[in-house]
Every structure is written in C-alpha cells, then in structure tokens.
Image 1 (cartoon, rainbow, N blue to C red):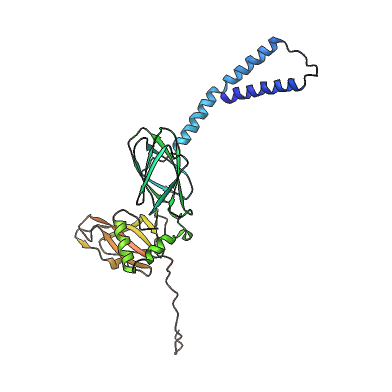
Image 2: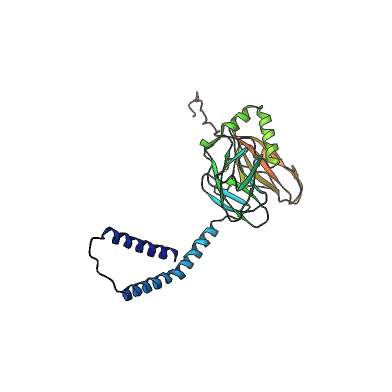
Length: 310
C-alpha cells in the first residue's frame, strides 16, 4: 500500500510540475466530479494490493527466517554470509576455525566483543538490530567468515563454525602455521598439535574444516574388532602437516588395545587416540592422524634386469 500511495503522490507532484512548466499554455478545466471519481478509483486500487502485500510480506519474512541458521554447529563457505540468532545483552560464544581470530564490524557501539584463543565472545546491545561480523585469522585477509548476528530475547548460546568440505584449498595454507611448525622440533610439533586438538583448541595458524561422506581421506585404518570413522570428522589444515580427526569404536565383546600402526601409511606422520587406548566393548575414542601435506608416494624407479626379465 505504501508503494501505491507513494506512486500516487509522485504522479500528483509530477502533474503540478507539468502545470507550472506550461503556465503559458491553455489547459482545459476538469470538472470536480471527474476528479472525485478518479480519486475514488485510485483509492480502490490502493486498497486492492493490501492482501497481496500482506502475503508477499509473510513470504519474504518466511524466506528470511528460513535463511536463519539456528544450529549449534554451522558449516560455512568463505565470504558467504550466514545469519544466526543470538542473545541480546548477554555473552554469546562463537567458536571459530581460526587459531587467533580477528573481528571487524561497523557497528562498534552496538556490540561488545572479545577474543580468547579461537573463541569470539559477542554481546549485542539492542534487540532485533542485525550486526554483521567478518571473522578472519589475525593478519590474514584471504579466508573470512561472514556472519550476521540477529539479537533476540533468548538464552545465551554457543555456535561452532567450520568450513564446508572443499572450502580449504591449498592456496590458503598459512605462513603462521608454517612458522609455528618450524619453531619446534618435528616430534614436538606433532606432540603439541595433538595436545591442543585433544583440549578442543586449534594449533596456531591451522584452519578447521568438517569432513563428509563424499570426501576422500588419506587415512586407512584396519584392526580386528575396531571400527574407524572419519566421514563425519574434522580436518585441520596447517603448513607442512594436516590433522585428521575421527573416531574409533570397539564393537567386539572383548577389550582391545588400539594399535597406532593400524593406521600406518605413506603420508601418515603420527597417530594417537584420546582419551583411551584400551577400549572396552562399546567404548570409543577420538582418533588423531597427522598427515604430511601434499606428500604423495613417489613413483617406483625400476632397475633394468641384467637378465632381461623386466
């Protein structure tokens, strides 16, 4: 209805401007009854879209609500905005895939934010006033999470972000991760990285992405009585190393000690399970596998046989 009224006002204004611009031209008079009839028709026409406008508004609102992600674990693509509901006037916890996240927003006055490790704490000040954040690794603008906070009167919440599978191309390997890896001895890097991952943290400079059924994982584990699953796991991308996080479960009727060698492979640098190594029937543990990034098995170089056999 507003658009119809605005159109009517603009039409009348343009008519007045046209009359002023052509003051020297004789314009025939229009009877009042004709103007009243035209105005009545215009009012009727203005009333007609009311129902359609209401339906359209409800449709738009429904679409907007449909685009709001209320999950506690949100998978994102770099630079693609996602809308999440948060509590107004309370601290909300955003767990990011960045080791040292940095936040950028234009609404500094309406938001209190702080970062601790890989977590961003946000406290919006006004209800129903959306706030857009760009979250990235400190000192790096290549990979960014775009999130719009929708403040509501609701309990505080925690949302964990991870990149969709395939959203972490090799070009995004970070100098920060490489510098951290080079600052320690090789064995120390793996020990420190596994310790951080077990504590729910991300090694410096690493980025986390979720794995799906369609992803190809460079890990193959086999041990009798144990079931290994990586399809719903995580992959942390570093410099020279990546860390695959999966699960191992004992489906037998006897206790089984997990053997790290069951996951041995050409690109595998180290393997560990947490918090258990000895698994009772039905017990499970997280499995951490460090793999060498971009390391492929070299082609075999054949030695010519002196007997001509091969």
